Image 1 (cartoon, rainbow, N blue to C red):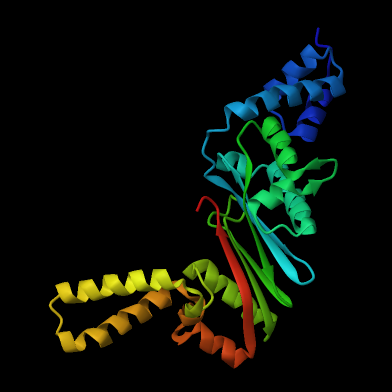
Image 2: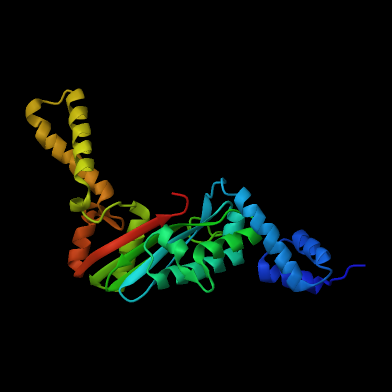
Length: 275
């Protein structure tokens, strides 16, 4: 006769997010002692963490929060969408975000070292990974400085938590325009704020490519400088936010939209799950 009840199984699953069979087996091994069953599940789960170390985390979620003077954006990664939409995983992400933001971390390494109660974030994530049965990792942490912030979290599937997250730091303007710019960033995926931030070696490499391409196309020598500059402009439109055509009105640049709104962007971060 079972020395536990269905209520015990339910409580174990609710507290840990463990599977039905694992919960039953742990209660049997613990002779119905709920706290002992919890310890059994944790120990068994932690043994599996090392085995899962080499696995790939292609799913997960992004979440963000703004504080005074800075905003934090994180990616918590999992192996499958099944775990990514688990309530325990979603709650873990919020706990991790709070800890990372409180520590002022601006990298995954610093985020994992941040304090989360009596343990570090890295230790907390490993504990929860043990119970959820998948490799879980705090893969990305981004911090943005500013006076005001716009946060946009985009769902690529209605059944999953947000997969693309954007934080924009700004001064002046209004919240509606700022959110619109954040949505633009989610769609257009700029790498830099302005063309001045693009590393010189990256610009030089692109210049060499477009010049060689133009020559191979048989373009007149006299026309090359204009052609090269035109193609470099196109290059900047792809990677520099202020140069990009505004997603809601491609006849305007993002810079023009900001100027008309009296807004200055002080920084931004964009994170996509698995990218």
